[in-house]
Image (cartoon, rainbow, N blue to C red):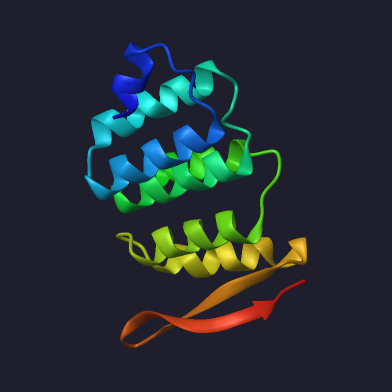
Length: 132
């Protein structure tokens, strides 16, 4: 659908990219997601917090947490949704303890985040709390 819009001369906006990224994520189409990401970069929209969060979510769900971290680190503004997307991605990665490391990293930011704890049975959801 996204490519069809482009072929017909429809200019995508930040909402178009969000939905295109969500569609790529749902279809587990990594290649298409990377192409959309390149177009986002070309148009200078990667700094948009909503698009950045969609990119983080996509990369995490595709198992590319390193790419998600790179997107997160380049975001000029980070919100609780972006933080939680990355924490969720870390918790499902090969090294779920990185979720806790990241949680500790953002404590000084003074925002609410969903927190996770690591126990004998792995990383689990703890609840929403304010940190900082």
